[in-house]
Length: 227
Ligand code: CA
Image 1 (cartoon, rainbow, N blue to C red):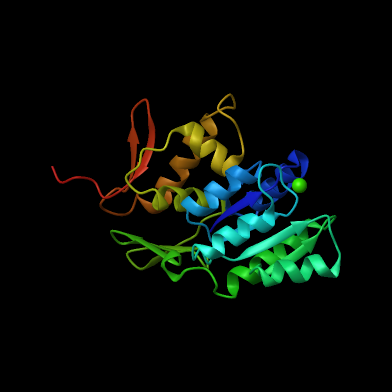
Image 2 (tube, rainbow, N blue to C red):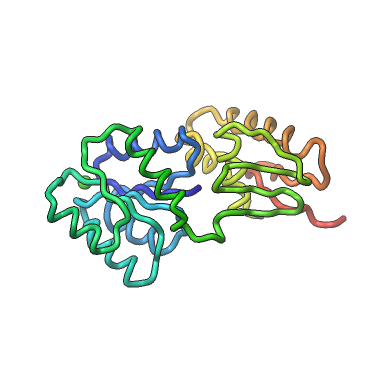
């Protein structure tokens, strides 16, 4: 599942992002309203967590613009405001839920899971199939040739990232930032080790091999070209 967090308060943004990544979600972060608006309109997300008070463009306007263009992704508003008027306004504009700061992370996670379960997320996100590899994104399960593959949260997130961006070569730095919240300066050996473990689970006993190393560039997942 891929989420967008739009939050301009950097501590809060990092806290929310980190927690969601640890829970196994792929998380994009926008640190101001304009970036958030652009990403919400151009990328596909399963859920957007949207702060109300934002620099550049506030959460109300982002939500309004999204709904006006038919973007139906579920939105959870996050705000310091707690007045009933604000809550009503958010819901009228098409927010799906509303959480007032400060909140416990467990509360946020529970609401996120409820919204995702409600089935507002577009159904084409539910499954990805590449050759005989199948990812059930809602239940976070992977099978290959019909056999269930046991993956950790991180392994599933890594596989999901590769599968969503099938045939794109993903640099280690991108994988690091999306799955481990590390920057490129960090030890990218972590990525290689994780890929090796993932390969052992999804490729070692099967043909064709789907995870490919592109020397000097990164990794990609696809059905290899014949010959
Ligand atoms: Ca804010």
